Amino acid sequence: MRRKGKKELTWKRVYKANQRAIKLIYTHYPKMVLSRLIYTVWTALTPYVGIYCSALIIGELAGGKDAGKLAELVLFTLIIEAAIAFVSALLLKWQNSEGGGMYQYFQIQQIFTKKLLDMDFVKIDEEKTHEMLSSIEQYQNGGGWGLISLIRCYEVVLSSVFTFLGGITLTVSLFTSTVPESAGAYQMLNHPLFIALIIFVMLAVTWLSPVLATKAGEYWAKNADKHNQENRIFRFYSFFGHRPEIAADVRIYRQDLIGAKNMVLKTGVFESKGLFAGYARGPMGFYNAASAAVSVLFTGVIYLFVCLKAWAGAFGIGSVTQYAASVTKAASGLSSLIEIAGTMRNNTFFLEKTFEFLDIPNPMYQGSLTVEKRRDRDYEVEFRNVSFQYPGSTSYALKNVSMKFRIGERLAVVGRNGSGKTTFIKLLCRLYDPTEGEILLNGINIRKYNYLDYLSIFSVVFQDFKLFSFPLGQNVAASCSYDKEQVISSLQKAGFGERLSELPDGTETYLYKDFSENGVDISGGEAQKIALARSLYKDSPFIILDEPTAALDPVAEADIYTRFNEVVGDKTAIYISHRLSSCQFCDEIAVFDNGEIVQQGSHEKLVEDEEGKYYELWRAQAQYYTE
Ligand code: ADP
Image (cartoon, rainbow, N blue to C red; front, top):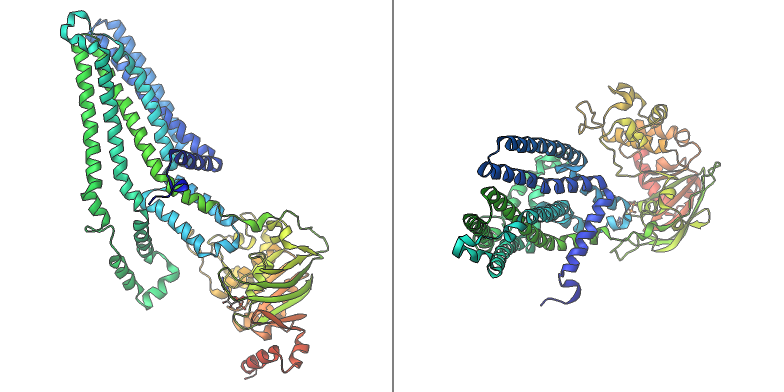
């Protein structure tokens, strides 16, 4: 049973969703929307100029036959048509440069990208967010639903309205011109009832065709979720070979075979015996065919009425072409207006799904305090009784963590896998907010700071850091323009100096081959050095390194350690590692176990406690170093 209220798809709801959507696109891309809509109105109205002019010419040919007047009319028509063609070309060029075809598609995707980048990190991590985004993509790819069809809808609305109005303007005299008395029985064409009947038949037929077409369209819209799942599978396996990062595993384990099987094994809604083929053979096909047939019927009624009136002498032969063309166009305007209203109605559900995603709140980023840009870089960060559970998890990843660190210190965070080290850093960088307790920067809860401002004091090399297929210099500077000397110096400090000198285009060398044939592929260790250089270039007061040498060979690792103080300079370094040997140079070591800090102190102090966790880890690893 249909529920009342929100579930009811009223025209008010349709209007609200579509208006909000067009406003949204307009705020992001005003020129794209304007250029497309202006071009649409222009192309809807200009054909009538041609229709009107040719009616005048034919009228003159059939009537007065004045050669001078004919020449004038033809010249006038040519000039005005040339001017129209010229303006059309200009408007089309404007439209294409502002957002034609696929470009428009990508611009709309940018709206989702912006939302994702502004969203609380915790939401990005949630399965539900991915589900929502994936559904929106499938609606787009499957039936062209959602924001992607919106500009097209508004184009059709405008072109329909203007086509209708233009057509009506040239049609009024068809009904007002009267058949002369001499026409005898044909005078019934003048009777208001007859005219009303003709208008009624025209309107009924005009209305029926799009209504039938919309009915056919509903079969797609209603079953969107069924083809979504299928499209998702198609998309995944169709691009199986396009992804170099999975190529090795696919080959070794022949996962292409699983792919091929999955492509055919699924429910098969698109197959010849599937759901949609059934609809096409049944009701959907019937509605589509009926819609086409009805519109042909309309043309017949028009020609009959116009020809009868001309035959009876109501107007000249020139007007026959004008009326036949303009009535057909007015009707097609009305018909497409009704059809697009149906499409926009069907699209409402998908727009609302889109808004549900775009409206995901981001309460984390409401702080407004600016982080004082201190010359002395005298920042102090404190964790006060911080506990944290990942969303949806019942256990604590961090439990009652309290710790203070001041600028210039070298702090190591050690512990076994899963002990909470990375979570500790994610909280420090405000990717998540603590479940209990608080984190303070210079005595103030970090939630109160403007998020981007707060982030500016941290450089992080995450364990699973990512580099991009841009030139090396842009990767290091995280910016298109960069200080070359600074980039080179950061790369050298990170141990990439030698490799840099071999690169064909120096700091302008592209990483990977996505955007340049001369791009270089780099090893995991080299990538780690570049990521380290990126964190140094940012020159923020805190530098956080999560297993920064995991991919380095022992020589490169030893090289970084011996120069660690020089590399890190006056920054506060937080160094995460499960390799205790690499933490000895830190002033302070915090030992994590099961989400808690179980020990804290210098290496010398910690190894003394033979009952402690640190000693246990140290002893387990020492074998490798001493053997
Ligand atoms: P470490 O960095 O010391 O290896 P983590 O901080 O990554 O440890 O993990 C601490 C605990 O939190 C582990 O039990 C881990 O399984 C859990 N955890 C980590 N990330 C997530 C996540 N995104 N969602 C749920 N649990 C997580």
